[in-house]
Amino acid sequence: MRPVHVLRLCSVFEPVRVDGRSARYDPIGGMQNHTATLTRCLDAQGHAQTVVTSRLAGRRGVTRLGRSAVVHRTGLPVPRLRQLWALDALRVALRRPARPVDVVHAHQGEDLATLPLARLAARRHRCPLVVTVHCSVGHTLTGRGPRTRLLRALGGAVERSALRRADAVVVLTDRTAAALAADGVPAERVSTIPSGFDPRLFAGSSPDAFPSARRPRIGYVGRLAPQKRADRLVEAFGRMREPASLVVVGDGPDRERVHALAAGHPRVHLSGFVEHTAVPAVLASLDVLVLPSAYEEMGSVLTEALASGLPVVASDVGGIPEVVHHGVTGLLVPPGDVDALAAALDRLAADAGLRARLAAGARARAAEYAWPRLAARVASVYAWVRQEDALEAVA
Image (cartoon, rainbow, N blue to C red; front, side, top):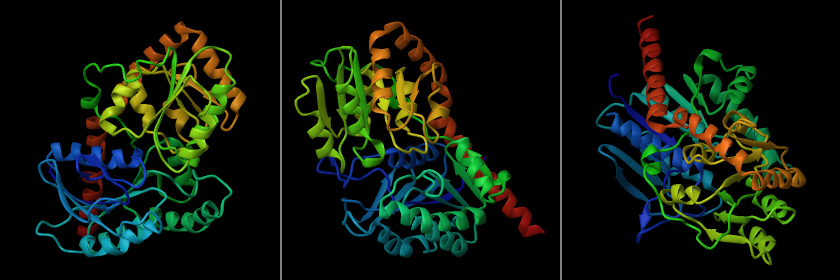
């Protein structure tokens, strides 16, 4: 497969390090890890990439990643009105580089400014547009707040319009693929390629990250954000009948609420934010991972749990059931049902044999989610849209 030059547009990307630490507004989530690891894998496969993203709390400017990828960080260091990063990004995305752009690849989360920016860039460079949907605001986002209602109404229209015009759409789950087909996105243009894990991070053994926590250890790893409902996990842990420890790893806007609920629980361990390279050691030190999200496109930490051979208890929402097979790799519970969550945790805490069977099921499925394999599938999408573009030019 001939190497291509990809212009990658994403509102969030692995943050630059300042004084030895990751600069950030909020902890690193699945989309940041997805875009960065994909870029690294494609760089290793020989593809050239120009990444344009927001600066978050880091410095505005240019950094290099791997052998040939270049990352442009744009925008202002403000936690609100983050959509404005796209205005500053225009100057980079529309600039004609020394090597022509072959494919524009946009990564859409809840920040919809990326989509119009990507359409302008594809038109400017006269090349195909690929869009990866990390969170469909029209089909995955839930909630009743004014921000959510606005995103679903306005954002849903922007999303449908952009995806119908994209040359190819990558989704993380088959559920989203079916929803987009119902929206009028041609099925032949849609590819399901999930998020994954970097095998290099999960090779070898790690020391125990929580030596003072008694087993079995139940853990949460991720952003402490309203969507993730870590607060419900703390409530469920308080209702458990079986002895266990709870480890909460993460930071974010729900930090104060989660910490307040955990106060007075001697068996709750709050570790705060850890960098992504430390996540394998964290997972290896747990016995059960919990993802109690209110909504979720997929949940990339779930694939890392598979790589760690870790049973999962998760909400039966979004694309989670496509990763967590009930009774095979984990247990699914209704979203928001604290009693059902507590009962599932009690079941796993009391049954070491069940934990072992689910762990074996997780390890058996892990290879499907290794990033080098997934990146090759993304590169195949690039080859397909370029071939289709060439055929249209001849016609």
